[in-house]
Image (cartoon, rainbow, N blue to C red):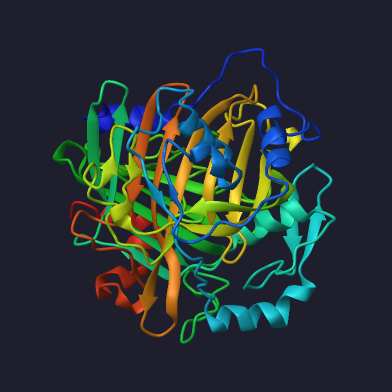
Length: 450
């Protein structure tokens, strides 16, 4: 397990290399055979009544509502599998409308947004100024439009997990060894804002639209290890990634190639680690639309039990117990996300299947395949809504478990702590996190440990 910052930092810098000679996969290739079979098997879905209880005895009756990775867990094909006593209780589907100001902005400006295919093989969107880029995504490029909707999905302009409500992460291996960390975080949207009483663009963040700041609180040997990611408004510019090293009391900027490096020693790579479920950008990726389906998801204002790991989980799997609340049957748009051909060489993920909520565009499940298109990781993503006093319910809080089925390793992460505290949005965040320089600039990393 990762027990020192030195081991963690080496893992952060290391790239995930898969067997040599596999060669880059062309974007024109069809989805994996497993996904083709899943798409065909779920093409004609019936209804699922609230009150349905799914167990190991009857799960096969309901697999048409399960993403591919969930089916694998029920089948028991890998080390990670559902326990005999597992139970999923199904409730009604609940709608959580997006903030009115975000919807209004979308209605006024979305018609001007369009997809651009560049001469170098990259992709982009033009004329985007905020809101949902493609509220009624259609062909051509429907999959890519849905990827853009996910990338720019609504988020509070400020999302904080501070000293009193930190992010909670735990890793586990096949021997049952568990290692946990608590992480302070500040996510700030600095452009394309649509919330009331917030400037659309922060003048202090020239050229950026989003910043992510993370710092380890515990254990002590990793304390103060931090990273800052800056997201340019120009989608063709690479994200900037900085890491603060406590032993050196300074930060360094990492290479663009670090997108496959693990975040804080977890099973999530840099391109995974975001509440919406994808953090890779839209320039170097394309996406194919596989269809709209209904899947089982833990969603909405379910009880905040995620941070009390391993309590309230079926172990060793790390699957939520019925005490969390009822699952919903959610409409999702399924997209197959891959690097564009000229950027595939050396990249660790051959295909990333995202089951994107059709209402708010956050990922509800993800299946990742290696460059040989063999299932590598599968992730359950429970998206939770919290109340903002000015806006109403807002998305952002998340609890997720990712299972590496090739290396028998897993990670659980939750914006909740063991006391049930969750993400604080916007003005609900403590005033100190409004400090832009400290939490949204590389120079701010120099203030750590002072």
